[in-house]
Amino acid sequence: MSSRLSVILQYFVIFLATGLLIWFSLGGLQVEGDENKWQYLQRTWSNANKEWLLLMAAITLISHFLRAVRWRILLQPAGYTPKLWNSFLSLMVGYLVNLVIPRGGEVSRCYNLYKLDKTPVEISFGTVVVERIVDVICLLALVLLSFLLESQKLIAFIDSLPIGSAKGTSRSATIAFIAAGFAAIVFLAYFLIKKNEKASNFFKKTWGGFKGGFTSVFKLKSKWPFIICSIAIWILYFFMSYCVVQAFPATSTLGVSAVMSLFAIGAIAMAVPTPGGAGSYHVMVPQGLVFLYAIPRTDAVAFTFIFHGWQTLILIVAGAISLILTSLIVKKNSRSIKPS
Image: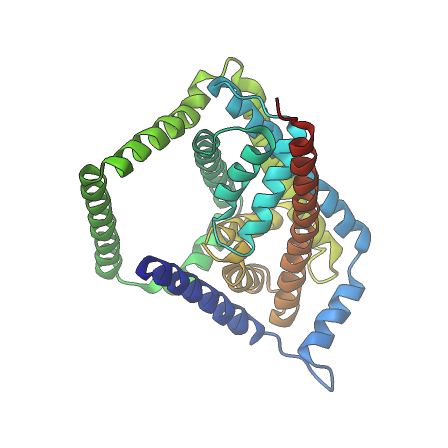
């Protein structure tokens, strides 16, 4: 009961923080006359170029399809070759779950793939960890490229954030505190597993499967398809941002280097463990638009809300359809299995 209560409390804090960040961001939406904030957002949406937004939706689905291809490539050295369609459905279900439970999509897509293709969850989860590591490397490369293109502006932007004015001693103390807490959790988990035989056997089995999935990247016979997919995914992510920037009159004049900087800021904001990056994205991206490119705050906030809302709507629709199709496929497979 206590563990369940702690999980509930954890998600309560996450959703509370998300709500407060969104409320804080909406505070920057200052409208004039009789128009309220919701009406201003509606007007901003109606003025947007829908062709650019539809192109962004298409690019989004293509990038996720490539993610499914890359995931399948990673699973092959571990001895599993799920159907590409099943990998794609599982990936989209994972994105849907991520909108409700931060980082819960990583586990749910592995479980979904198990239901469709009987790929062990611990092995597929190991490959998901590899994916995340590769994505972090790509993100760091993108941030580095952004700094090369807009170094002075981005450094000034970081200094403008509350974290930029924090003292070095307090940051060091925070890092030390987090490290000590993590070490204590690891030690306690190790002690409990050692004392419990069932838990020990379960951990060994899970770790064996996880290790097999995690090391699959080193066993790839042909690494180039994996590398090309990884690069292509992040190029498509950039073009998603470019399409949305072009869709709104207030941002359509921004150049490629500006889109690159905003994309880097948005990607970092989306990495914060809130549902779908909500809250952190709504605070950081408008701040970047205002500070770096002198976009009026009201336009910057409206742009961010519609951008994130449109992206979220795509994931909800695609994820819901994928969840329904998964259910139908599982039912069909269960009917086709006749008792001997």
